[in-house]
Image (tube, rainbow, N blue to C red; front, side, top):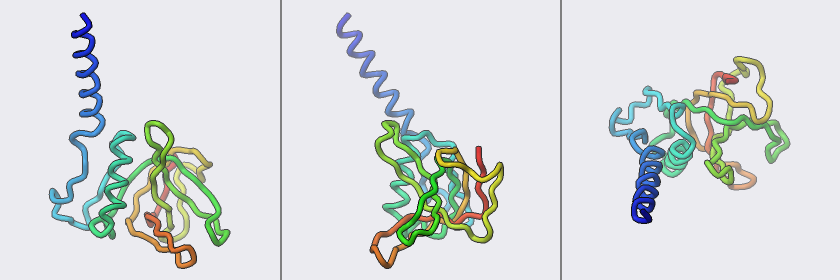
Length: 151
């Protein structure tokens, strides 16, 4: 009986790992790196979403200029210069770590469903780039968006 419980536990753990991370990762070789093809992250679970955002950060030169659609938690805060800044955040399953994108508007802000409040769930589509702050030297991942949908 103990062997059965151990085997069942291993199977469940293996199943959880495979279903959380398998099958949906982004492979840009499929579209030949076509800058007009949308990279849609909205159907991914939290674990895979966080992994894909990390992949986008780490391979910025491949993803820069690509259109990305994602959903996550809305944040509004004052940046280093005191200006209002917005971001979309994906929390890890343990809620200990976050990854996301700072949001820039390509024109006048267009909020669908009203202006979001902190911690609202939103969806955005934008062009990915990296921004280096001259005063701090930090580099930030950015999505330049046209609209924001409050879900």
